Length: 211
Image (cartoon, rainbow, N blue to C red; front, side):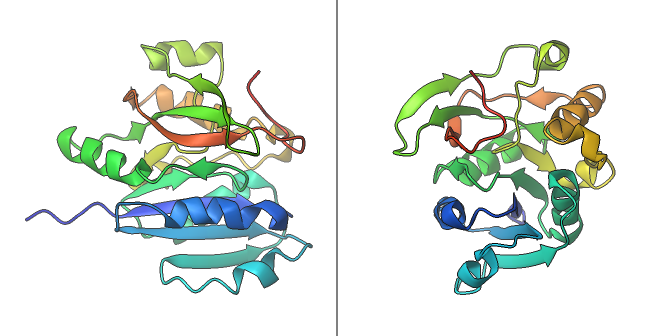
């Protein structure tokens, strides 16, 4: 019997105490049981640490570090993750309960692909769907036209990303994910099953949003 795929959900956060518990709740609510949730606190100076230290869940790992921006926070998550696959989640976004279950099924039936990008939707703060974002066909070729992938919900095989990390240059902040996806797309096929498994949260504090 094959060993079940183990996932690491990596969530970088900075001063999102007012949102982080809702995001974590969607991560813990996965129907697939084999996963860990790693919260990388990038030097928050609000009450994030106080809030999350009250979480009693054996799947949860809290790691606080000095502020170095999202790229370094995500790379830190890569290094501490125990998963065969990593899924990224921003601290203001949400996973649907089927996210890891759909990923597990796809991985087992498609010979353990390097990168999986399900579709996602964009929701408001009441979780009303504003838009559904579908991945284009031939995405490896089309990614040069724009960052279709985003971060939240992307699924990456750990042996790939541990050697292909985010660029930590602060001048790239906000685009560090796109830079990595371009590098990975030049080497690995991006698989795009047409299922919605996560939500991008549109709110007034958001630094990057699809219009």
